[in-house]
Image 1: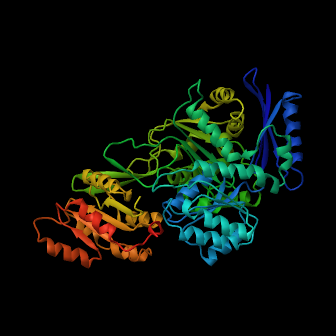
Image 2: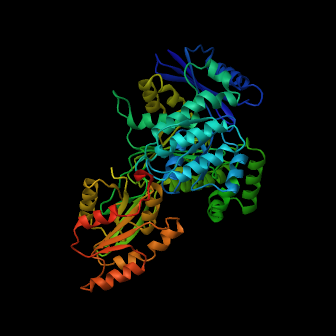
Length: 460
Length: 141
């Protein structure tokens, strides 16, 4: 069996050719995504480049994922910020969405205006445990029903409010689906039903609305959001299949042009004794997206959060040179630093900082508490201290010969316990950017996808 | 189900877990909906849980003697969060040393608590108190 996977990204359309008989990746190629004109043009260009390298490639199945045309733009809404709003955010991010904003409590006029401005594809509306607060979710549903925009609403809140919400949303003509509560009982996370609804809506409505229906017509299986494919790939690599073992707990970091994504496949139970776990439980497979940490589009915020002295000393560039490079990157996002240049060093220092911030936001946090029985710790979120594998994805890591330097950003620092970051992981790099492709392949042949991941993802 | 939801927990840096489990069990057996936050619960966590679950009462336990300090400001936080009339109940070993319970009770009532129980109070007294609360939830309507 021969497979071709296609990842229609915001910038590049990436193809991976796989031969199941020889159990190998025959080749990869990429070309610019052409979503504004005809998305197939970019696909044909990439296929042309691929066949230049490997000769004519006839495939039996084509598997696709997409984050083109802005990806799956979502807004998450809940009641209390640390409870259902957080659960809503987790569900949306795990479904592979780009969560632009998360709102809590009743939304204000200003927030309603913001939603119209964002013009999301989907809104995940949550709030209240089952039998808990209904007023806020009903009020928010009413407010959403009056907003402009072609978004679909996924209702995943208090079941006791569902009928009333259904009545008022039907009357307003807004598209909606109702599914199980993301937090049916206090502090119990139930994100899978919402996640499935989001994926379903992506396939049924979003793909078409974004002019990507031609992809769906050609594809042998359903087109899924790219982050969801990457997440599937990570989960497979970690857990393995029924027959073969995976590599165990892992964390993956994808430093892209516009965002930095962090994935962790771990239960994240505390690695030390004398600790009390606080806050919302988190899923084994967790994804977080940092929209303010990108190597091209959000460099300002990354520079603001960085230590200039560190960048100058590491890269050997002056502050003025750094600023010049940052400006150049912002005005032409396709710009690439030359191998071994000072600019590449600037990129590496910035990427390391992005990795550091994104990991600190993703992992759990320790807090020291003094009780009458002495010092003890609380942990909010996942403890990733004992994670033994950290995988680097994204051009800035794969194109650099200093991958480990960048990935050191994820590592726990010495000093007082604060972030539950990996203490002593080994670093692996996805050189050919195959995670999304393997996540797609896993839908049809898990065993092959796992074999290829083990073959391709190497320790540094 | 009685339709009455109670948020329970041990406040502050107190880690006494056994009593908390017994209260949880007893309340559930008596038909209440229990949202148990466990030990070392902050005031904010009580408030947040009560909002999300539309609770009818908050039952605060404290065994290590710092209860009075830990409970100060809880009523104000509830009001700030819109939980205006939610009944607050406190019980356990609320203060250090052998103090006159009436005085302790008066101090807690002044802080905005609605019911304060002395050490050794049977749990049934709480059941009765909760059942007599004004009907707040739709569950009972």
